[in-house]
Length: 291
Image (cartoon, rainbow, N blue to C red):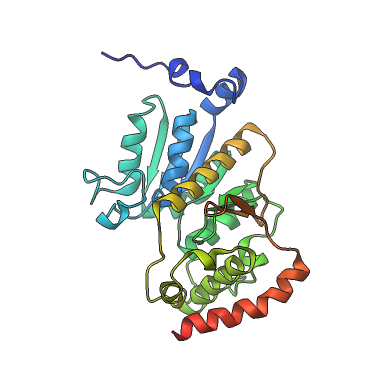
C-alpha cells in the first residue's frame, strides 16, 4: 500500500522553492472560479505545487466537447459536476488538501470566499461573474489572475489598485449590477476585449479568419485548442503561486501574450502606437463580421 506524505509529495519542488516557502504553499488558500479549460489547468498547477487549500466554483457539468482541452474532463467525469469532479481528482493527487466546492450558489458567498483566499483566479468566461469577482476582490484587497479570450496563451494580474478590465477596456457595464447586464452590454464587452487582443497581439495570424468572425459575432462558440488553453491556465497558476509566495509578478494588469508559433512574448503596445492601430483593427473586425 502506498503511503502518502506531503514531504515526499513535494520534495522535487525544493530548489524552485525553499522549505519555508513550501510550508507557506501548504498553508495557502486560492479561490478558482471556473474549473474548466484555463481554470482547470491553473488548478492542476496549484494542487501539484502543494497549495493546501482550494476553493473551487463552477455551475456546469463536464461535456464531451470539453475533452479536447480541459484537464479534469474524462469519459468518467462527463455529465458530472465540474467543481466536484475536479475536487475528487485533486484529492487523488494530494489527499490532505482542504478543498471547498460551490456551484451556482458561489455568488451568495463571494465576499467570504474572496476574503478567505490569498489570491483569486478567474477561470470563468461569463462577464457578470467576472465583474462580481473583480469588484469584490478590489473591495477585499485581493489580486485577480486572468487571461484574455485569445487564440494565443496570455495572462494578466490585476492588483486591488489597478484598473479593472471593465475600466481599462471601457465596458459599458460600469455602474450596473453584475447580475443586471443586458445583451447589448455583454456584446459590447466581448467586442472591446476582441479589439484589445487584436491590437496588442498577433492572434489574427494564427486562426481561421472566417471562424474568428463568427466567434466575434457571437454565432459560434469560442475556439479552444488544448496547447493554447493549457499553457494559458498554467501561466495563470504560476502567477497565483508568485502571489501566494509574495514574489514579483511577470505580468501586470495589461498582461502579455505568449506566441508558441514564433517562440516570442508579445507585450502590449505603447499607447500612442495602440491608438494608431485601433482604427485598423476596428476595420478588420468589421470585415470579419461582414463575412
